[in-house]
Length: 292
Image 1: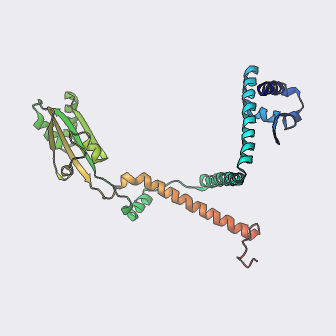
Image 2 (image 1 turned 180 degrees about the vertical axis):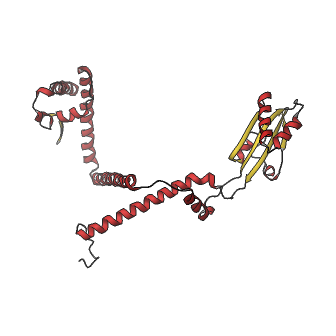
């Protein structure tokens, strides 16, 4: 019985929508009721707002049919919940209102930020903040820079490769890379600060082992394993609890400064808004300014 009723309602609603250009405009402003659950009503105007444009007659009928059915079930559930949990209704309404207000306040705050905010942060600002808060930027575990090459132990010119590997000259570095490409040696460079554990993942060692001794050694180191020489060089080291270099935290500091600037902008706007409202009498805070 219920589905037949919904079907009849659907036909009526789609027919009305299809002929809306020839019908009085007041038909679509809550005058004609399609479904009613208690005091809640679904009107032809409501249906008009939700039916996507471009649907065929059959598709429109199916869409409206499903919508009306869901609307009826939704209203019945809401009314049942209000009867079963009457003490929760006010609390839910309060939370919904608080959320609505939060959205509106967030929207107006974002408007002032978008309108008045200057997001340009100079390198000097970043450097000054870093100098004043250097202790806040500590690393939890060692970090390194360096490079690793894996060479099969049958390669006869390994000593020459080691010499090139330890060189800081740009032309010899290029020769090293060309040599690795020629013989298909795996060559990994860590030019940016990298966790020591990630560096170790490219070597035949256990991460859980005592590998900290590698950090204190200078010069080229080698490990022979499974017919392969792993030649590696650690060029720079940051120990645990050292301060992070500025380049590692530059973007984080930029975000901190922008967030701080946003907060200050909103505080200035709020103070001005309150003061102006008090001066015009739009706001009165009783107990202040001799108000009683």
